[in-house]
Image: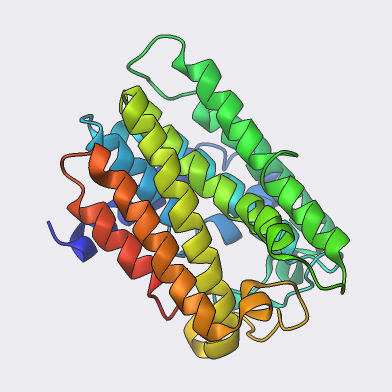
Length: 291
């Protein structure tokens, strides 16, 4: 199966899985909340994190659909973070994926609650996974909470806010981005491995891959804010010019080299798996993308 075909299969499956999960609640009186949640959750996007969860589960030798509850949970947390990042008190963005941001459609209060509900529901979703190894669920839920919370994504956002307008060191930028972007990618890869019954070596390899591709992905994202267009990106560009991005720290030329370096680090980790061609191709496509 080609890169595009497998990616499409994973993407279509997670779209249906998420839609079906919330369809059961349409009769609830708080219907407007579910509408706001689905507005952002089902708005498309790369579905990168679910794809990685599915593929690591498959590479560990299990049926990839076993990772669906974890894949959905990570995507729900990712979506909540986007809704909150776009709020006026945060990045104050008007567009996301080519459409008005959640708070522009549903108001700030409902957008906050939609994000809150997605975050909380993610743990309900994750708890439904059927895992091959007894005792893995507690580890999986703990890992998801750590990657999403104060030690992970939220902690990275705090560091970003505190950085203000001052120029940061290389380590400070890495501290922010490895948490904001990297930890949720780590959750997707690690949870996919857990769902697949990974060996210790495979689990560690999944985490190493996530660390490398997460940094490469974020550096590329920073580059696209400079060289991309609004039509390509589906959102405003040039909005990070005053922020502590990798481009501001290194410049475009060095960033290009770092993307190659971190991508190769990620690919090297995949030696722990026999059937790794798809993930190698995926890593290269993500870190060389124009959108």
